[in-house]
Amino acid sequence: MSVAMFGCGRSESPSANEKVRRNGVTPAQLTDANFQREVIESELPVLVDMWAPWCQPCIAMKPTIRELAAELSGEAKVAEVNIEENPFIKEKYNIDKYPMLLIFVDGKEAERLVGLKSKKYLNDALQVYIRDQTRAER
Image (cartoon, rainbow, N blue to C red; front, side):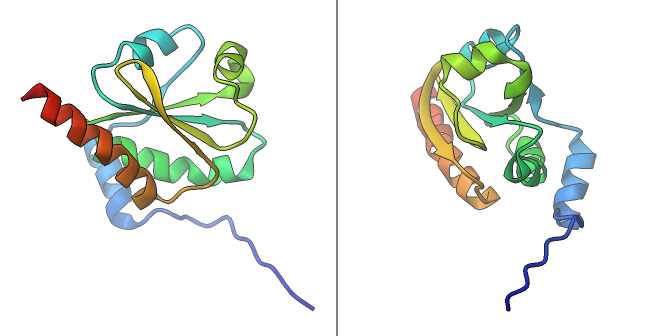
């Protein structure tokens, strides 16, 4: 017999919680109406969390997405979009797996990540584009 236990406790570390509270930065909330302005026209690399309210891994990633938004403020933009409420984005980017995370650079999709990812994994993925952008600005 095997037993699996799942909890609904807090998954954020106190230091991450404090950082989010301290600088007040949260992920940008995207819609079909503001996607062009917030993502395509952004001067910073953008991580977009494509999520659905019924997707448990998507919900589990929310603390990670909030922490990244706070920690990368000014270096990259972190945003989220409820795909169920924004069908244009869902169709345009062929979102059929969840969570789906897209990284945009200079208005173009640069990378597509599928599934539950750690903060370190996402941070490492974004740092490549942050470094490239920093080099290009010099």
